Length: 330
Image (cartoon, rainbow, N blue to C red; front, side, top):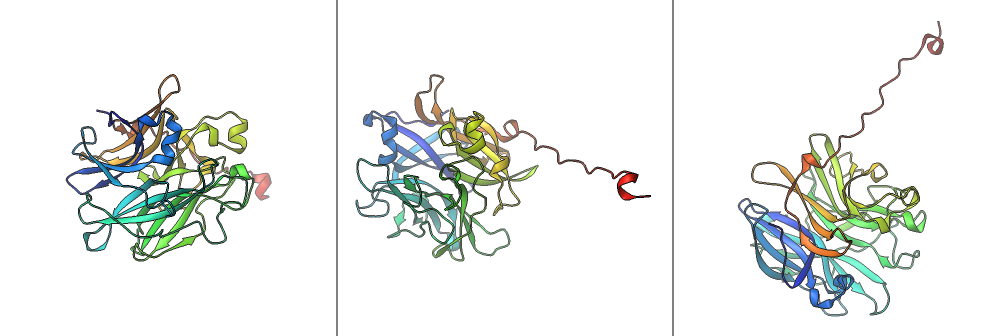
């Protein structure tokens, strides 16, 4: 059944799998706020468990904002969980700090909490990573109202050379409305991180690429992300495309990624899709229910959807053309 709370909206989420139990970490905010848009400044991280990705036991909040002046002083936003050395779990999350109550000016940074059991978490003081280096847009670099550096997706390097973090970020070049890129950072120990160049190019038609996740299917590597209609840019906006959950080609789990070739797989009635392997070995996708048929915000999490039913086949590459005799000469 759909995961929902009676008195709270639920939206972005991510998973950890300890081999026996699926752990769901989700954003939530009270419906008593009235306007669903107010949820973003009131987000907390909750925890639920399941044996089958369908029937959930809610365990309540596990991570809340820090003091008002802290990097996560306004809200705790989307992240990911990985199992690190010494069987220690690491929850990387977005710290949001709005500069005042009226404007949209918001600085996003990445924080971390650790746990031995996925239930009790200890936050590290201060952020582990902010928008940095010569590649990324900072607050005030353009017209964008936030310093985008959120939704950290952390995974081990396939060759064993440390860890990678993918981040929702914006390049500091190109038209203001079309700077969405896959931000990148690397670490040897999950504690000290350094920024690296983005793994995609601006100008792909997205103001931002949210909740990134590299995935491998029978067709090879891709990257899953979300972007709604209001945040499309460039030719996608001009041509009237609509948003939702997207998939784009990738050279590997650490990129490069090619969002300019992204294809929509779910319209924006569902958002922030995540793919996980169920106990039968099948890849399934869950997303939060964003809109009902009348366009009203819902705020629940869907049942699993089989990935093979969602992914369109990749376009066939052009076949090489045999040269004519006139072209090669006699």
